[in-house]
Image (cartoon, rainbow, N blue to C red; front, side):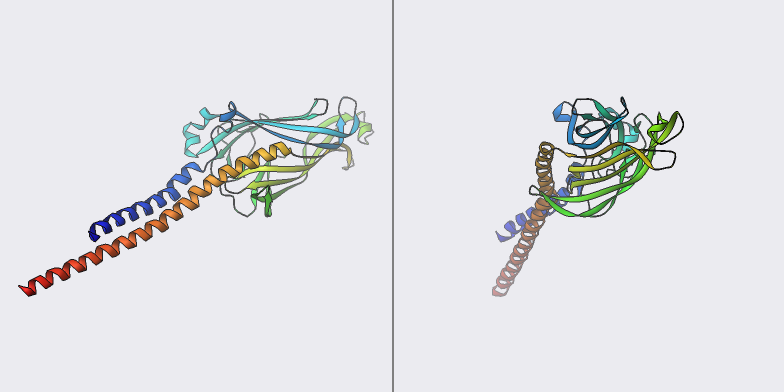
Length: 327
């Protein structure tokens, strides 16, 4: 009887150990990926909201400067599922996201607007230049991680982060772990030094030029702070301290186009944190808790089963030996 029980325990032990290994090395890698359609539950489009105040905002209609202007930022993101099913996208395990972002003032006037199409690895978030990837319809060389999310299982380290205003990669510098309403998050800071991002033709006297008109270089700089849930790589909140200027012929800033502090709205941050808590808890359960319990319980059952089988063999051997002698 002990032998039969032992064999059953050995079988259960092996099953649990294999189950733990499958969960850890096959199930989790298959699930821990960015979705092909991030807004599937919301009609195929996700919306994120930010708000802030522009201490200075240039009005191109009147060539005057406005002060303390409330701003709202809305970004829409849609996954291009058919594009992600092409051979090239499948080979790179890519998700293809189209985004549109607009910045509006308190009167609903669009201050800035831009579009982007990103092709990125669903696990590492590293971008590629395939599948029609572009910024405002222009093909640019994309590298680093997509600005929409960090890698799955984000590590406490610096990451190359692609900034769509300068179309270049900038380091997202790891600053440590913090708490966001009970959710452990990693803090990253992306610093963009003053960089020329274009030109604007303006009246010469506006930028200190003696000419009737002057093609003024437009400069952009930013300090972006991001809070990332490490299991999923989700950016649950962030804020931006941004400055855009026009420079005159002497190379100095003459006009402030935008001087603003913009951050994730409390409602958006709360929703993001709540969602990240659910997803990270599920990943932690599947990636850590379930495999660990399966391994430990399986090992215990396996050991007990082997002991029972060996013990039953010894007893069986002893019984046969005694009967032979008596005969």
